[in-house]
Length: 436
Image 1 (cartoon, helix red, strand yellow):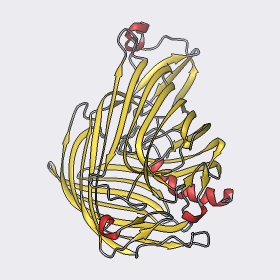
Image 2 (image 1 turned 90 degrees about the vertical axis):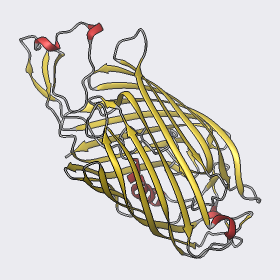
Image 3 (image 1 turned 30 degrees about the vertical axis):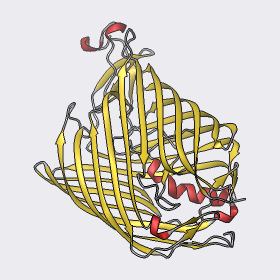
Image 4 (image 1 turned 120 degrees about the vertical axis):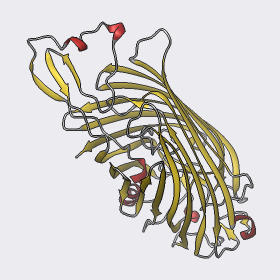
């Protein structure tokens, strides 16, 4: 069983991609209010308008006048800290921490977005020439600690490997602003050439039957599409609109061979080249007959490998963390209570349905149902392969804005079977984010 110290290090590094980019404006609590709020704020409950991201907002709460100044959404630097507790454990993990640094900067003609986690990083940069853009991207997952898969609610010791990838991307694309014309509202179509490297090696726990392919350079093409027409509220949560996107990856490993990860043979001739298509769709709207404080959000993710030629290193990875709300994080498939990248899958569809209630202008209640269907890698069978599986989960959460440009998110999740291979369980997530 891995020690908590090792779990701590692993999650601190891997959790970088789970950060939610963007935290709310500070709440400026002024002295006790003796005068009513400005006329534009004195509206009846059925005319209430939810405060939106970046706007100035003034109101009176508990006999105090509160003013939220406008925010610069073109330049955001934030840190997120927290963790998830599991009951019962998932694999060997009782708890996992979360830590990440986030930076988004938009100053024409340049854009930059970076999620930094030392050994796990993701950086996107672009320079525009009208509607055309030159693009650069860097991503790496190069953990200095072993990775072990989970089956039958236990870690499969024989699957322990030390492996990682790093890749650079260069390309070009087009970007068009779309309504409601905020910093994150645009349509992007981008084409990249990828060059990178994949390495793997056994550890002291690796089963003697495991056979690894050679370390290899890799190269390929990537087509990426993004559309974000989402209007977000003061807490940077989707309020109304639609967002969608897709990623098409065509990759070749330069040197490759047969591999055995503990079961059946994955032939090098089948897995050297692979094609993956992933997509997502978000929609947020009001609920007929109810006030603007009530919202309904649907998020659907899917992945497909047409030739079924994925292996342990190229499979889609589905994990947990906070629910993705930021425009550039919405591509991440989310399953409440899961470990980071817990499920290697070849084909999947995952849907989240959320009801959200605005309790106060800085306090939101979330009720969410999740369902997943897919083919996941089966590590508890001697005939290692992808097997069909499904799961359902329920989660509830609270998003709360705090003074000092910070935000707190609390979530309880209940999974019926998929996280623990047939056993139900709960998870508790706490995430604090601060802009600086």
